[in-house]
Amino acid sequence: MSTFLWVVVPYVCLTVFVLGHAWRYHYDKFGWTTRSSQLYERKLLRIGSPLFHFGMLGVVGGHVIGLLVPRSWTKAVGIGDHLYHVVAVTGGLVAGVMAVVGMAILIYRRRTVGPVFSATTAMDKVMYLFLGAAILLGMWNTIAGSIFTLGGEYNYREGVSVWYRSFLAFQPDAGLMADAPLGFQLHALVAFGLFALWPFTRLVHVFSAPVGYLTRPYIVYRSRDDQQLGSHTPRRGWDRINK
Image (tube, rainbow, N blue to C red; front, side, top):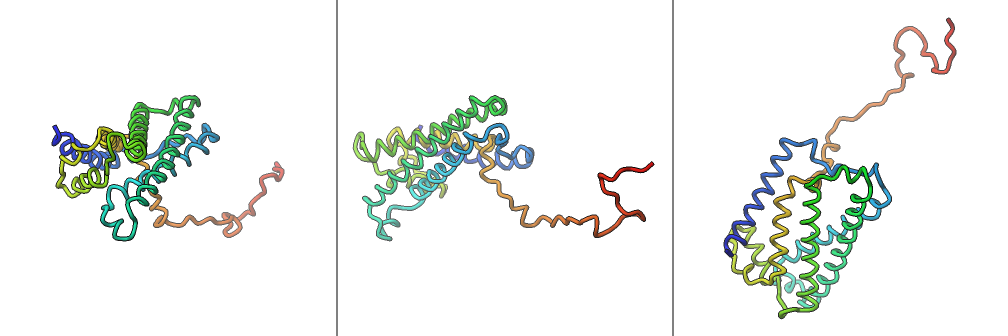
């Protein structure tokens, strides 16, 4: 079971993530969008969207540092375990609260604004469910594992992080995740489920960038005074027509 959960399932989800994006870009370029609803309502969007997006930037940044940077590296640059622990807990909770509050506002907006609700698809609802569950489980792991230390303190940098790096190196050690607390296991499974859903939701816009603007041709605007067409002087639009 450990091999299935921590080797087979993650690689299946990763494969769907990569191939799904290739399929979506090839067959649904016009659907590669967030389907913006700013025209329908702006007040709640102006509050919820920055909270959610900046919160998620903090969450993703924390995961990149926590999962990809080995413990020995931070010690080598003079960052001890206590300092790392304080920064990780503080930054993780602040970013998580921002993301949760922002997402709650956006979901409330989708439920209460008629046109926005009409534009909400079934995949949007599933995506919000997985995304919300992943964020809340991550916050619970931070609180329970770092503050309450339920069941004894668990150092994810020596377990989950090592497994994640071995997974990316295509040499996964399933035993590392099998020994992790249930909260970390659920968080990982929900996150991989979100990655499998990603290509088929509005989340694809994360990989969009207006690079085409750098190479597109200039648009030349020319006044009518620069070149007169025909043999008659152009008449002003408000001049009376003499018949």
